[in-house]
Image 1 (cartoon, rainbow, N blue to C red):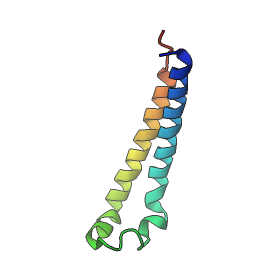
Image 2 (image 1 turned 120 degrees about the horizontal axis):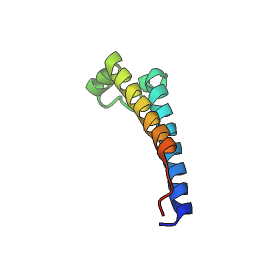
Image 3 (image 1 turned 60 degrees about the horizontal axis):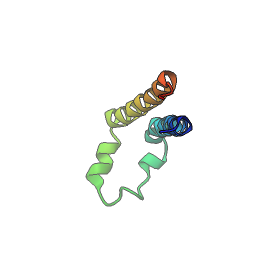
Image 4 (image 1 turned 180 degrees about the vertical axis):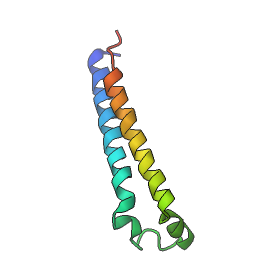
Length: 80
């Protein structure tokens, strides 16, 4: 694989990880997470997703995702 393609892949991967991580950190604590619209069909799932430890676990996955992106950016080396 050409070096420029490797670099583009790493940049896209890092940006995707950071963006997804930020969404996972912020989303469980917003009003959208509690909206009735998208979970109105499954009240048991809505109740489960509104528990504090579930929202904390989702935010923890977001932190892990950001960490993976940062580590990939730091450890990147061109492979020739």
